[in-house]
Every structure is written in structure tokens, then in C-alpha cells.
Length: 163
Image 1 (cartoon, one colour):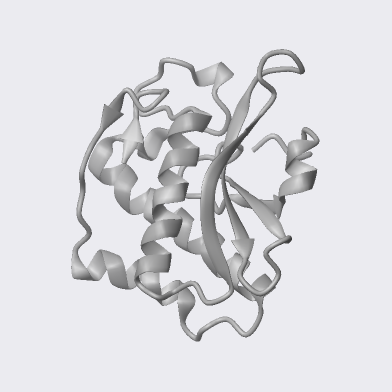
Image 2 (cartoon, rainbow, N blue to C red; image 1 turned 30 degrees about the vertical axis):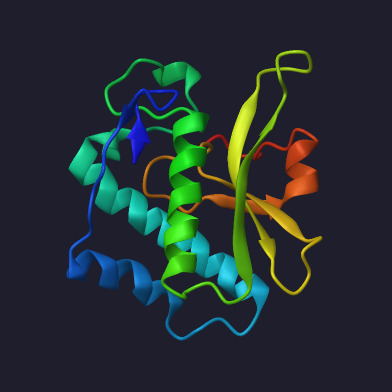
């Protein structure tokens, strides 16, 4: 798990059997569609954040960054995208993802066209052209991330609500 804005701090953590049960329970029963699995993934990532947040002090992480920059436990989009990518890989490794596979995290912006921003990403296995951003930076710790088509996210998508 990385935090400290820009992954300046990295911690190796483990989950107890009870904590893992809380996460894996979101995949029971198994998804019958890719859309249903995306909903399960969002809930599982939120559960990861709750469990890991208590262990690292990142449970106070607030949506976005600018208003809370430098606050204890605050994550930036590099931290968020890295952690969500790891969570997706853990879910895949344990056989919980049947419809999706993790991708490398993605970045947009590069200062020329606005602030750079990064997100975890995944694609559908049966339709690899269907790629999705898994963006937890726009939500407080423990809230399900937005999962939206990657092409739309790359165009500068932001949620209408500011929570």
C-alpha cells in the first residue's frame, strides 16, 4: 500500500482471514455479467480502503486533493491509482474476477492540457476493447470508486457531484 502523496511511503500489509472474507464476500454470488462484476469490484475496492485505511491512517483520506493537501493520511491520485491497481491484481490472483482483468494505471493531462491525473484501469476479458478507469481519487476513503469507460475518462471526465 502506498501513501504520502506520490507513493513516498510504501507499506507491506497483510489481511486476516476475516478481513479477506469481507472483501471476497462482495463476489458472492459470482457475477453473471461484466456490468454486475464492475459493481462488485467497486464495493470490494471500498472495502479494501476501509480495512487498509485503519492500518495506515489513510482512513481520513478525503475526495480529491487540493483542499486537503498535506493533511495526515491524504492520498493523491498516484497513491490511489497504484493502490487500486494492486487491489485489482489481488482480486484477479484469487480468481474473483471472471469478466475483467487489470491494466497498468493510466494518466491524462500532463500539465499542457490541465493538471495530470492518474487512475487504475481494467478491461473486459471477452471484449478487450472495452476499457474502464477505476478512479477512487474523486471519493472519500471507503466509498466505491467511479468505474467509467476509459475513453470518456481520458476526455477529462469528472463527476458532477463533488463528494
